[in-house]
Amino acid sequence: MTNIFRGPQAMLAVLIVAGGVAASVQPALGRGGGPPVWTMTLNYCRQTVYNKGIADVTRFEEEVKKCVADPVTYPPAYNKPAW
Image 1 (tube, rainbow, N blue to C red):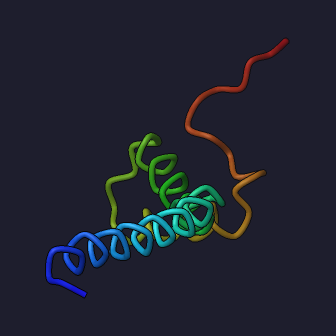
Image 2 (cartoon, rainbow, N blue to C red):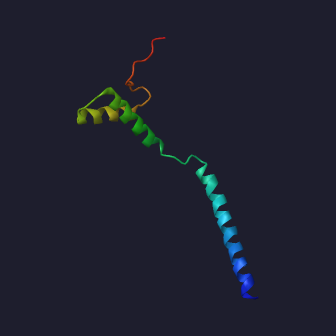
Image 3 (cartoon, rainbow, N blue to C red):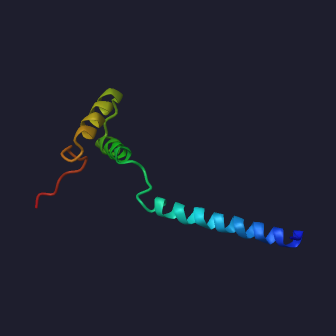
């Protein structure tokens, strides 16, 4: 085999392998690639407590811990509508 055919064959092999790797990576990224739920909960709780205007660091941390323990029933920083 001459050197003329080795280059294109090698390039074709690299492209096939790269295409196979790219095809296997995309489905993995499509399955919820994002921050973990606990991170989003922690960020939500920090923002909620911040919106309340608590300036004391110790109290702030206590309120964040309360919120993380039960974010669903933790009182939000805004008034609930009285419908």
